[in-house]
Image (cartoon, rainbow, N blue to C red; front, side, top):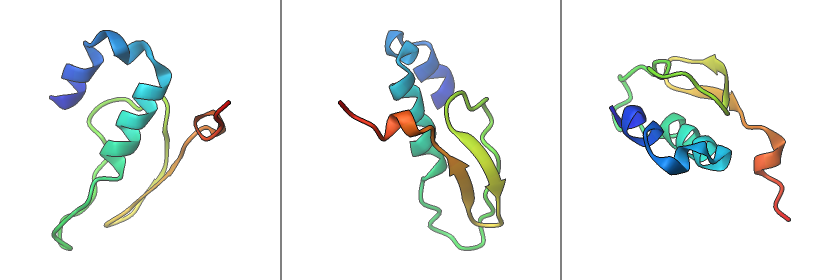
Length: 69
């Protein structure tokens, strides 16, 4: 539901906003150790999910989001 909301906003066209949203969703804290991670229920457009472990994600963020002028 959150993805549906943010993707309908005008600022969603900003690739940095999309990258930050995806990073935020993938890096959320799991407060219970017995909760398994699952793949996002929406398509990732900027961040690339490399691997999903039992309680972790391994993802790649394009270098241009680390470079600031």
